[in-house]
Length: 250
Image 1: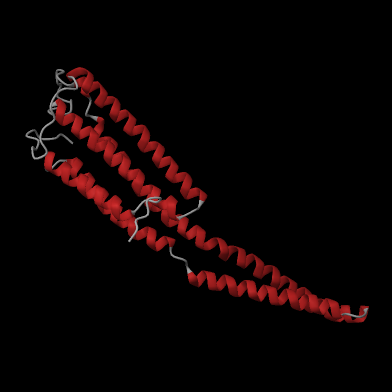
Image 2: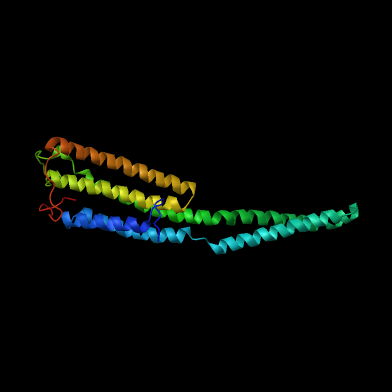
């Protein structure tokens, strides 16, 4: 089976997140960041199911719309036929009340058809926006986890209210890098909705989430750059199997 490299695959996004969770758990076992990533994996799996459900056509509403449009067309044809067969003023006065009632029914059917035609779009939009709000919330949770990981404060004198900063420079780089990866993958989860739903509100919301994750990721990489500047770029990274011996403050 040929893979589609022109669109995001929800399955691949979930697999990438699962691998990231394993990497975080291996290096920072029992940390809050690993639990956040586990929650993000669960949300990504739900995203795949939600998109399939939301993108599915609502045939009940569509059949109702077709029925209303067909009834409106029949009424319009009947009105045209009646007007064409009128031959005098007397006939017009006798049938005008009936035609007026049919015309009012036609207007009601038109308004109802318009409402039904937008109902499916509004329903899908509401479901998608609720899911995107959940993704935006976890973006802020990830940001909270990297907030106290300030490289400029490493080695500074602690006060009783200071957060624990007991990560080595290498561990801190890894921690911040994992946060950046989680932000990027969260943006990919949101982009899945924009691919399947062409609603302008959904697309704009996805764009807002992508800009938010990009801005936060840039701040994280500024911290990584500071660490590399302070401690050098030639420090060997720990092996893949090595895990952190220091507890991670959350």
